[in-house]
Image (cartoon, rainbow over all chains, first blue to last red; front, side, top):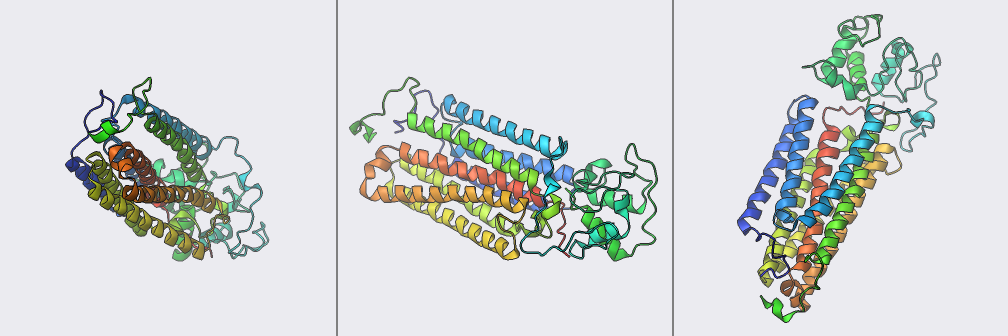
Length: 226
Length: 209
């Protein structure tokens, strides 16, 4: 038996180990999917999902791919590649997602997408593009664009208020205990509650003059900003 | 074992088999390949300007993909049972589990074909926006890996009928096939969590007006 295995390697496990590992993989996947549908804040759920997925990864590599039993050199060459890959992934995400280094002119040449005909984008003062999402139209109609920048939304150029580009990505982390949606909602309803550092309490109360439907679409739109 | 009738593997300075070491080195490099594709996808998937109702939250189908993930995990279990059968020189079990693995892998590909055509019907192609480009490139390359794996496993199954010695006398052949297949599985474990679950969670789909 196992003539191809190095004398220093440990014997392979019995079949039952494979079946246990297979069962764990299925259960963990079920837990991940179930957790996805629970109403948990993303700063709790996302780390949990990452840890569970890492657990499945390690189980397959150790037991199904036998790294736990095989010679260390096999582990070394694989882990070398894995560590480099993780480094590249984290490096790229840090550079382009969080810090937006140098802000490359990504939005410089937005090409209209083939399936939806885009009319001329909204020009300040020239009417609002009816093809924009309802919330984006509300944003422009209510004059939010006069004070807030949203990259990719023509006309949103004001600098009196905070830049809202990528708002949904950070809204959930702004106030402990508040989800991204709760944060955005309260910020529109009561602008003075959470002032962004470096900005004064200048925003006009909007909630009293805006209809429920328009308000909801505005919140929904703001939550898509990544 | 009956391996005595075979020429033993060439002696190597490490005492380890070169083919197996090559496979692990290849898989290490594949980590870089898929890692870069996943990172590119994560950076670009929600670039706002061109989404217009074709964002991850609008098109990705979590229930369907959970089912295909389940199928691929099961295929990995079948594959490891094939490897164990090969170690025992149990030809019948080996064939059963090789066939099961290829069968489940094919079902996974069927899910992917369904998913891709559904997305294209909704208007999302590889050229629509950055989400489409990075998504189809990433999952497409994974699908190609699964396809290669299915062909490889089916060829090992065919081999078991006319060159039995290659699959039982030398378990390494199935072992290496298994390493490749499990790697394809762990790449999907990462894609399912990062691209699908994390990629959609907490986002609302904003339809184009």
